[in-house]
Image 1: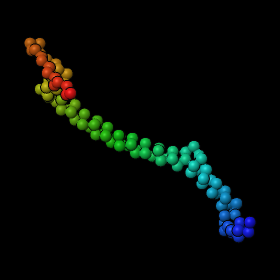
Image 2 (image 1 turned 30 degrees about the vertical axis):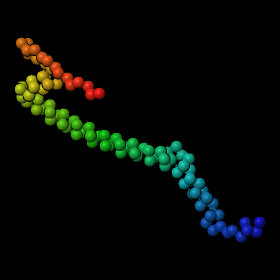
Image 3 (image 1 turned 90 degrees about the vertical axis):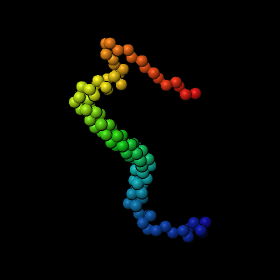
Length: 103
């Protein structure tokens, strides 16, 4: 029992403001609805969405360039329609050859 009495705590640990501040920090860090783990997950989600945003901005820019290119020339528009949507002229026959599935 004498060993317990011999352990002396610093004065600031006994201070009510220190104890209140420590309780507040523990509450915010671990027990609150928006604790540190939630903040970390939220920030990682934000970073992921920002990366996707950059990707889609580049895709939109590329699509707009392709659109301008197609609308500028009737020959390119016809080529695109034939390759992408298998369109044909009235007097043509169209044969679509697909590769055999790999086993």
